[in-house]
Image 1 (cartoon, rainbow, N blue to C red):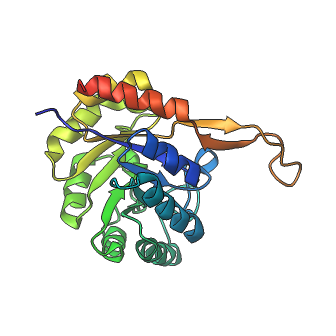
Image 2: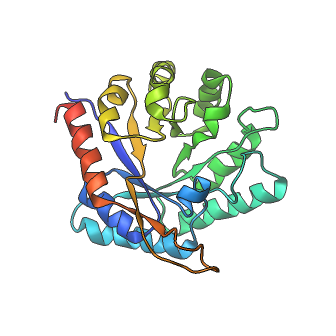
Length: 251
């Protein structure tokens, strides 16, 4: 039987959800300000619209799963009590809005997984899937982190293997997949290109995550970010990624 490796696309709008559906992605990670910050919590309105569009685009099929990122600010992953409270509320709101899962992450000041924070966020998710994001890439003892996350009920980790690009962390990704042995899914993400799919699949990851993004020129003027434009999901890049993953899987 052919091995399955899921495709997840990071999107920032409902058009991205439609593109993810068209190329047969299993999930979208829904976020805001992806390029500028690495991603922040999307609004509840956007999440509700994304869930509705996923159902509409699927027709009689199974909708692409919508998993919002829950991250209240840019920067590191050590959160205050007040910031954790906001995240718990955001997770509950995401579940109420129909999210299939949430993407979270929290560390202690000494660089370990924040067990109490993750426990609270998993509880708030009420049985929906929980992905621990790339905060794991700054954890030194990743095997201990995987063991802890598995025990806390986390479904998967999003990781580049500790490198700037996942292809450069492919050896660590393989080691993580072997250590986890299915207890926690290993999802490769971070600068993923179509030509990387073969090596990532060979490493034994359970899923591949990428943004497939392009930039749409649009001058917002001095109060709107100038002429840098804004990021969108690019259909061509998404199709290329899907085709490359299919080739890597021999499908």
